[in-house]
Length: 414
Image (tube, rainbow, N blue to C red; front, top):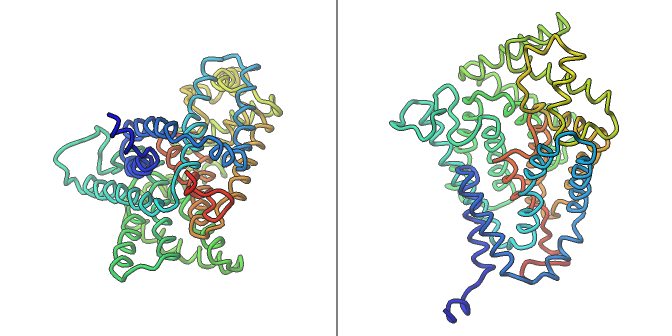
């Protein structure tokens, strides 16, 4: 037993556990949750608290996040639903606890291995997606597996975000690292197949996010004039979207549905009542009404559902039979403004701005961090932060892209 503890190296085991975490993130919630618990234990065994506290204290993003999180917590004072408020705060677990743990203890030398593990898992996921699409798998790991929506382990919306991040991660590595011809060929192959895979699943968020991320990626990495960036984006987007429209049945049908929704909205002044986009418009209109009544500090975290039901009954009865089943507002910006008002929304936006300002000076890591931020900001237009698979990916990539390789603190000190 003595020899075991003498040879026990918690930091080395921590690095291997992070690599395992990166591999499990696209594949299993249960696996990455368990590994997160193990990382906490190893982080405690590492010790070196003075060093870790300095890292955390000198990182502005953590201050911005805690100000936002404390304001959410403070809003419990004026909510009517304390239980739901506490449940929502609990969802920030990975950011409040795991992000500082990863930020203070990931070794720079292990970052390439972390990315390789993540890419390996995404390649496995993509292969399964194509097999599901082609009906070549003789078993069903999940009942939802279908050629209509071939997403192996998660809902099609987060899967689309994962695909886009993986595409730009590989492009960034080709851009900033020397690779053999064979490696370039393999990366190029999977960049193409993952882009195609993006248009096979049933989501529209991914296609929109791809275009936004492309603009940001070109701007950050090539410093093009805005007109050149726009021209390149339009050229690539037109080619990809046109090809996808005629080849992918899912993308073809979703594109027509989206066009019909917007056309009906423009010509009739109201949303269609029989499609997902129309439902979102009605939910967003409901949220806007609540925000106008509680503009500064909102209704309090946890009270969104009660406020939603009240507005439908009193101000928007025409929507009541259409969108009475409330889960959330399908928009983080509106959800935040409803919960904690425009004050809370401003704190949320400030948090992401400070995150961008504090990204690593290493151009490769800065590019990867910028892609992650862009994807989160675009996802929040139709989804909620935090959100299961996406939150853990955000935490891992943020912890890496905030690191300063040659800064005043170094992982070699651990």
